[in-house]
Length: 45
Length: 449
Image 1: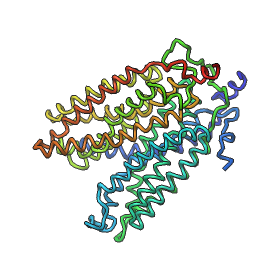
Image 2 (image 1 turned 90 degrees about the horizontal axis):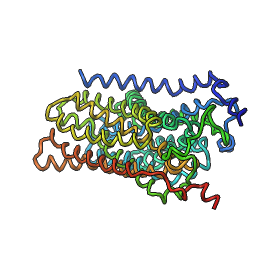
Image 3 (image 1 turned 180 degrees about the vertical axis):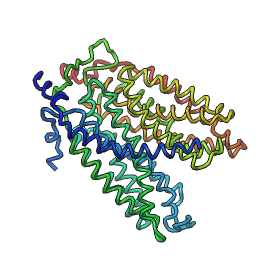
């Protein structure tokens, strides 16, 4: 079991897939947040 | 369909557990579109008249309001009744079914809008889409808890943050698409729903492809399971049927229901409320709604992560005490015309509303273990269905009653705010009454005897 734990640690990660997966969800979310902040600033104008 | 089976979703050595949160976000960011459904209300209410509602022919706003209410009701019911199936089928199949239901529901609703058949919109978005919401909402939760036994609050908070953030993508995207498809003979709602249905299906299926279940007995390197001295965190397990027989389940049901009731009414009426109280413009009110969305999302990850350090019970105690105090002061900010303090109070309240959703799976995991936590969480979400109706009804009816009895619009919310504060005090009492689950309910105890 210890061996399995060692092999499944983050050091063995597929970094490219990790980056692509986070970009896949992160980019639309960042766009949504940017639009929302732009609208929210109108509250104080 | 064998590809989607639980056995084919087991992680191989070398799989990085940080791939699971984006898989969960693929689902939650899509189904969170439900919070943005109100962007369709106005164009759907003038689907025949196009530039203005045509009385007698067009659907009314109250008729359209039932679409969202029905979806939230079915969300709770499908999460409650589908929880056991989700545990059995595994996250990949559950996410795929959620994608089929949610996207299929949107497309059915689009056909309903195109043919001007309201029952088909109810069936599509409310019932079929609602099933997608419920199954999708719970599908990644227990998997995340198993991958992150060291930080369950952070893990579930990340996923459930997506449900809050989904509206921030869904609302502007829907507006853009409706603008693109609108023409002199149509509002573009149906075409927008078709495109959203296809886009969300692709996004959700990607999530179902990425997700993996940890091997039996896997734990993070260096992780040590909680010791017995942490009375509120068990290392044992309770199955759904036994959990339903514990007082803790009903106390947490009330905790969630009261926390959601206090927040959801504000979300539904935020724009109208700030216009009534301070007389701000509709554009500024939309900005307030945007701020609320941001804090609804941010609160989910902030409070759930914090709960990993301060404990779930204390986190909810903070929600209820701070929420009650903030609600009690809202009428004063109205009288003083202190817009900034009013906005600050509400964004904090809404952050705790979101935090309540995100912290509850970890609270359940602490009390009942990991074996059936998805199914127990699903059953608890019926509290959301009740609160989804109770919150807006409380705000709307008390406001109407006050205005009909001669109270000025700006003061019509004062009673509601005090009612919300009182509800949160009751929630605090329920939270304080939560104790560790009796040993006899543990699966391990039943196996031994």
